[in-house]
Image (cartoon, rainbow, N blue to C red; front, side, top):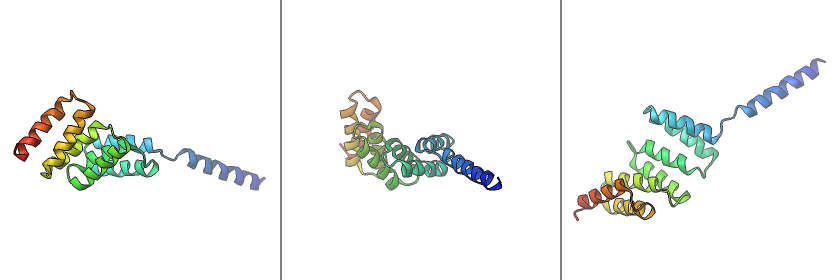
Length: 140
């Protein structure tokens, strides 16, 4: 009898652990909450976990790129680039990567990204304005 009870308790513990595992979406949602609260270090950690569980999660790369963009342009650009590789029509990723290039004064790449946004969404007023700013900063 004791053996049966022990086996049942062990089985319940294993099942509870299985059901308690977080999904990529769970980590993504938690990352968004941290991001909205300006806790970028925790947001990055959660987005990274989401990416580990689902390496094809373009939005997690995008939002992790946003989290990096304040302090690490290279990592932000890498994440935006991966989001674009996974979803070539991800206009927001082009737009934010364009601004990351702009802030490191790589105006040609910024211009290319803002133009890519306009190919996807020709009426995007923010991209039109950003394109003008990048061209002006470049000197034409």
